[in-house]
Image 1: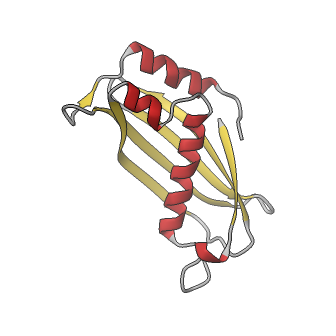
Image 2: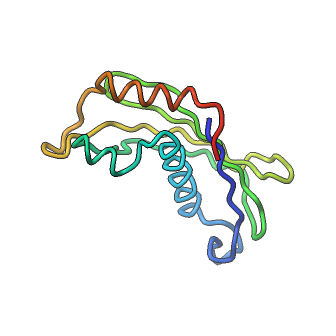
Length: 139
């Protein structure tokens, strides 16, 4: 599991003084890339392999608003590694009161850069994702 902390600033807010839904999606993506970076599986590594990571599905359950000054914790964990897809689960909560702000499930596929088509997850890539799923905590 990876944990990322974000403090809400003025530019994260919408016209109603709450964090906008789009910003939440940005926070989630940032936390996922931090998780991947923790084992060196970043954009450059994907490019060297001639592949990229494509998000094909995201489901977000918004549970509570977040306001200026809130400190949010985002937990990210690999939930499932299939033959052609990887499922990541995320939870965001308010550090001060532990209130869950949202939870999300994200599905990725590995895409071949040359063909633009999804490909099966090979053993080497599977091992990297397994290493990621076994990480206890990184910041």
